[in-house]
Amino acid sequence: MRTAPALLAHFAPQFAPRFLALLFAGLMLAGLLLAPPVLAAGNDDDSGSYSSSKAKPAGYYQAVRQIKAEEFDAALPLLLELVKKAPKDADIHNLLGFSYRKTGDLARAASHYETALTLDPKHKGALEYQGELFLMQGNRAAAEANLAKLKKICWLGCDALEDLKAALAKQ
Image 1 (tube, rainbow, N blue to C red):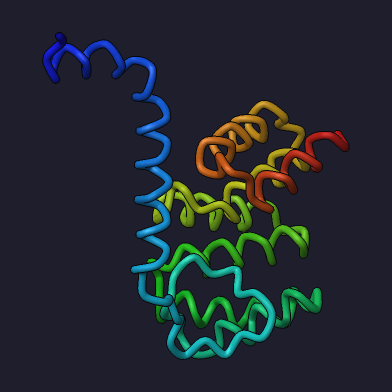
Image 2: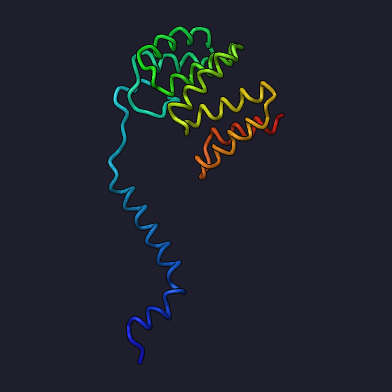
């Protein structure tokens, strides 16, 4: 007759992968059920915020609406005021970079993308938009490096990854 440890040693290799998969699934489900709902206080945005953090200075969502309406020249003065209030906000620097790029000021766009990525090296929007800037400048290798970073960050996929892939495919 085998002892319990001997039986465990005999059957463990067969059942360990299934057990670990079930344990992982159970932990994930428990995390989803027990996690408190996340609400961004003061979010006056009505259709996606481009924001990776909760608290934003007044006027942020107005600038986002202007950018979505492709009113980049109108968004720039507001964003410049916002960056004075929140100089360490990667989202604001990302939107400044985006707006400058869309108005043709590539040097200022590059500067703000760099600042956004210094503040938050995993900022998906800044990595995507900086990659698009690199393509505009003819630097495909740098755009591909940003794509590689996005693949690590968005291992389950994300819009920034797919958009930069599409931009690279067009080149």
